[in-house]
Length: 192
Image 1: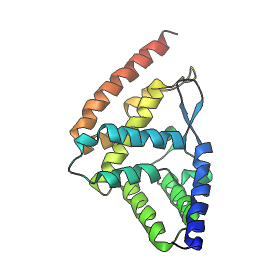
Image 2: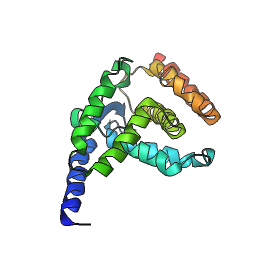
Image 3: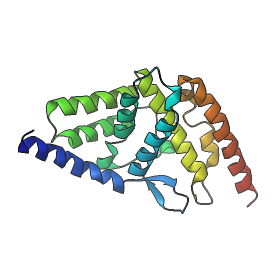
């Protein structure tokens, strides 16, 4: 590998570091705003914990999709799930931002990441469908686990990402447990 190629890849990695400073509307257990990078890390961990349920799929591809699924947010940040619409504005902006972020890379690496991201965004492959579901599951877990403000809308969890749970039977089982936790949170907040 030549010095120019090393420089290009390091430039990309340096720009991607911005994801560590992009905050989401979820909170950690100690009340700090969750970063997109922290969400991505735990999404990878969630995927690892359920890897045995997806032995028929390419797990390397699943992890790659997990790692890059929110990468475009390094440029213009995250749009909270309740504020997203099905009109595709988030997808369009995030893809444009991803293209900006990928500029330093050679065509081959750009294309690999963009292909993975498009697959995820469109939920084309079975691997992408799994990541879509796991992404929603991780978010729901964080919503229930985090030290959220008193006006946090836990009821949102009960419908969020529901359409992705059909990708695999285990998601319905996981979702049942998470929804039970959500209902307990709702009941707990009503008593405050």
